[in-house]
Amino acid sequence: MGSETELKIPVINFNEENLKPGSDSWVLSCKQVRQAMEEFGCFEIVCDEFPLELHNSIFGAAKDLFDLPVETKNKNISDRTGTLGYIVEQPLHPRYESTRIYSPETLQGVEYFTNLMWPQGNDTFRETVHSYSKRLEEMSEMVIRMVAESYGVERVFDSIRESAIYTFRFFKYRTRRSNETDVGLEAHSDTTFLSILHQHQVEGLQIKTKDGQWIDVKPSPSSFVVLAGDTLMTWSNDRVLACEHRVTIKEEKTRYSVGLFSHTKGLIHVPKEMVDEEHPLGYKPIDSLGFHAFRLSEEGLKSACPIKAYCGINYD
Ligand SMILES: O=C(O)CCC(=O)C(=O)O
Ligand SMILES: [Fe+2]
Image (cartoon, rainbow, N blue to C red; front, side):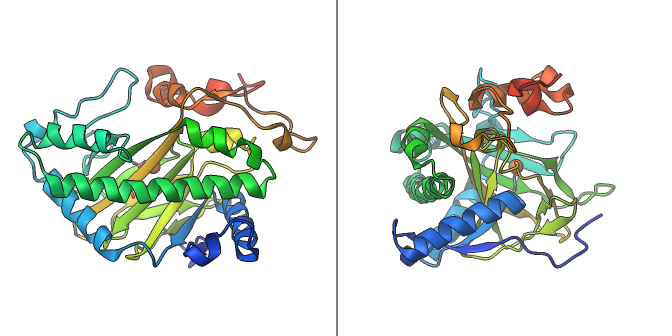
């Protein structure tokens, strides 16, 4: 398997110029975002205004973090909602290592994690992660606003924004040992509303198209990949499908990536504008975090379509 074509995911320019609500270029960008989401469930954001040194420092922070002793990394435990903390050497993807930070857009959230990993403190790490996450949070809000506007449901944007909760993840994929495959992470969709990923120097992220082809996402220093998750799919009543993706590493190099993942607190309803004859209501209101926990539960792991099993209408 692998990517057989040179098909590319849509690239949308997020420079300030294009992001002034109400301007012609804003309206055009909203349209592009909707088209990309409906066609691919994802797109690439190019943002030259995002400071390059912040990209470099976040991967410096990633290396410092993964270089910590495993006993320290293990302090980031999984919690009662089922969200996994530090993950390493799992049977399905032994090359994958990852750890998460709650509320990384708040100083408190980053500080808690930083102190857990470095009880003596680590100002560089704390400031880098906070500043990076804050910008990604703004980007995530911008995308949600654009999606909402493009469907004429801007009235619900504020409630989604207020209910958003974020986690940040660092990823490291170690090089292959004998007999191991090029699999970094198996095909899946995220349970999120949106996921924003950035990979560093080494390729690996692949996206599945509607007709089943896998496309490579090429890393670029100034670009991010935005993926629609299952929560966005339900909210949009299947107009946007959750993007299936995986990580396949062909180079014999360690791969690092980072991502900001947004869920929503409480129940999120399908806006009535999303429902018509062609799109009959497919989902009950979804508790995004509840669904995340369900997906990791025994029942969720067994289900052929966890999202439909969790909140689908007329699904057995
Ligand atoms: O490492 C990546 O680029 C993707 C990670 C991912 O898809 C995930 O953790 O859900
Ligand atoms: Fe993912």
